[in-house]
Length: 111
Image (cartoon, rainbow, N blue to C red; front, side):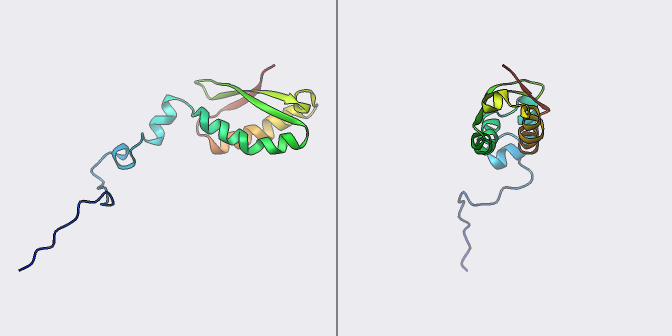
């Protein structure tokens, strides 16, 4: 009688008995949020909105991200002196960051 031998390949499904971190090889999302907001992810979202700012002669620079979820930006070029910069900051950049980066609570402009 022939016996089937299972190949222990890396594609073997992970069972539910293992912690999520062991399943994915990374921390769970909740733990990552508790530690700090991912500045690289913030920068990626800023890179997504940057072409819209540059189209109007402006840009933005990530200054800092606080432990409370406040993202500090420096608006540059035309955006720095534009009367609509508050609207751009709150309704444009802040909304995109809140949507795509867990833990972001507010975006403020620094000079």
